[in-house]
Image (tube, rainbow, N blue to C red; front, side, top):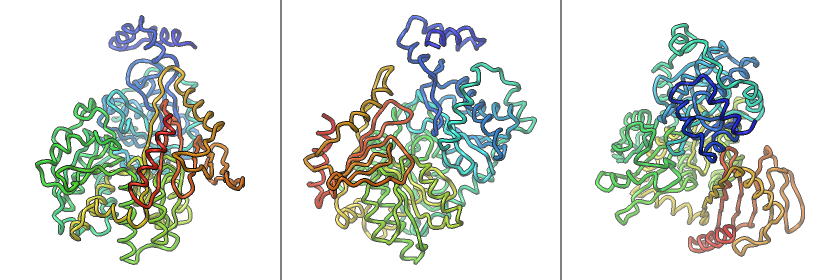
Length: 565
């Protein structure tokens, strides 16, 4: 079906007046019609995400309902518990879309537990496991700008969906018409008991579980720690402040970003990877007592921090730097307690800093590198759980500001990360040191591992094809050098082949296949190319290693310059 036929199908449907008016306003705008109706919003292992609005390639009540009906059809055909957990964030329509999903499940005879208010994504992962659910859904577009929303889908283990069930859901969705009327309203299903609100008891169980992940929480009161906190108009406001308050942290909240705001007026792109996400926090911290600035993204699964730079300003740490600092702190503290179990592991994504490997080696802990996506870190926990040794999981992180300590959730959790950041800062403050001092110590000890992420966003109706061609071209034309340093090996995660360019020897990569290409520069670093599975972009992850910061920075700049050309 071409885009005009799809458009006409929507115009002819029995839709509310406001939707029909929105559709009518598009009739002479061919580019917008192609964008909205040229394809259908794709469902994958991360669910689906898109700009909100009318159309088959937009997120709206009808595309969300269809996805939920597909999820329900998949779950109904399994032996899994016929129970679902649903959460939502502060974006426009998030609560509506959550209720739409609950109704779709109820129509299939599946009981839904729905959060009665905004709740972070990791709390949904926790609820799936605690309530014995067969699946879960979070309505969120994470850190995207305000016009976006999304449907994140989780399996019974609390991890985001894996390939096999996601493929079945996709097939189920393809057979479902767009405009099947709801059998009963949300309120009627609530009265009949097929939809229930999650009670405060589960919040307390989550709080107590997260608090149990603290190592030396007494340090927080002793240090008199002062933080400036922003929830970036999202879901972290209640749980982060509640837990840090219980631990005795002095909190100044960024008032302009305290309340939910789907427009994110004071932070157009609420991504903790960007320095701009903390702009309002810098203003507040300039006149408030502040040892650490802490910001959580709208669904509170990711966290960013900045600290005083000693010159009247603040320095934001990268996701890699914070991950390495937290990992070092946890391992050092547990080592002091003689509390590191035999066979302990830490986990990072392949695009995260190999500095973490050096730290793990120092403490005698195994590092497992996995594909990008926190579900793969969750998969490592599941393997340990299957042999009743989940205690061996110490910490997992991704360079995109996602961290997890503990096995209570299978997704990154900015709430537990907030507790750990504050504990780290308090311990250092009691020693008369800063977080920047601690980072400098890591670099001096292990070498300067500098990293940079370059995101190339592609445009046009064939944007995804452009991304695929870029990856194909890279495979065909492997550079001999990058930044003046010879490429010593190539790892192609799509073919599962690692080739040593100096010896010609090959080895099999023991990870699931993925469209990722890695160029190794011996001891000097690497470049990894990875297209997004849901958006028309290709990301390049650079790591440059040097004995001095100047040497590492010079190499990094040369690598970026060459690859950019």
